[in-house]
Image 1 (cartoon, rainbow, N blue to C red):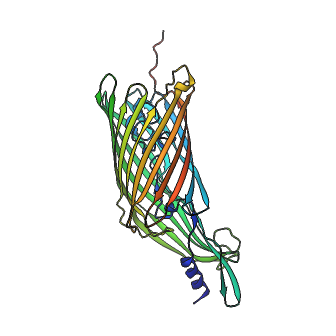
Image 2: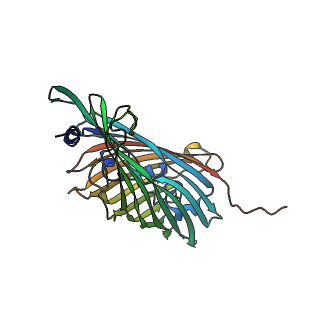
Image 3: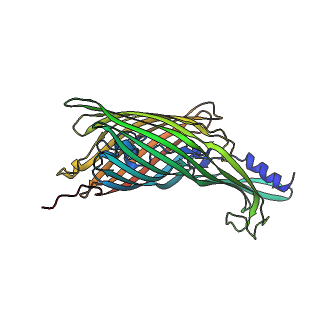
Length: 419
């Protein structure tokens, strides 16, 4: 057995006791369900109103109910812990940026840039000692992945009648990810790199409408479906194993070999999501609302054989969610009446290609939104606590904090006639 073959054997044999979310190491990682703190506070997929009464930042068919134009963004921080492990890990990132413009209370347009999946992972093993002829070798492994699929989205709203609206959106997928497998022998890094680029597109259609109203009750229906237009494809660049003497993460003149071979492979149809979503919102006309949501998501990709830290990938997901929300009033005199309060429960079932059993995620969310200023500015903060488990894989708990800021302005108002 050659020395490089010996290194590759060690990479396969060592175990993995610690990581960020272990499920981000499977395929493209866990797909984001929501991109705003207002939805996260409900554990929602963003279909039903969560930002303000009759308005969800994720659902274009509700944007015409906005009183102001908005630019908003959010930041998310997560901690993870594997069962029977004393190690915690952290992950944080911006969750996208969005610009919304309602037009005369009937129409609206929006531009968004958002991350589609969570692919960031760091995995490290315990140190092991081995005797190789007369030399003592201390070794451990590191796996890293980062990047992922991004989307630039354009969406708009059209009215059907006074109580119903439709919306349409177009996602243009782009981005890249990097997977790195390393074995460290007596403080010397031996790395193998894989870089993948992404390109594809998807369209989405949305509906919102009031289906029943009485003196004390208003029931609204929300639905959406998404269909892949062009499945995600790209190129995979695979760098052969090299000795990273200067630890700069890329082959250079100080490394061995200094000129590493690269195998380039064109990947087709590696990600092709389709989804159906439905939700009901009950407004008790006292600023208190309750909701129910369901989502069926499927990945119809034909090529699952691309490089990832684990040889598996999510192919379907179900989401069930319900909760309560009390909307704040910007015009209220007391500050506490301007605060929006949110509480939600949800359950997700993930199905994988290789795993015989589903991965089940249960979560509890809560959050609040604080209105300030004359143009509906809002600060949203959410907290989430949950658990993912599977008989085939791992049991991990996670905590999440999300902070979002939405700044309002006045656009497309009718000009007042001169006196």
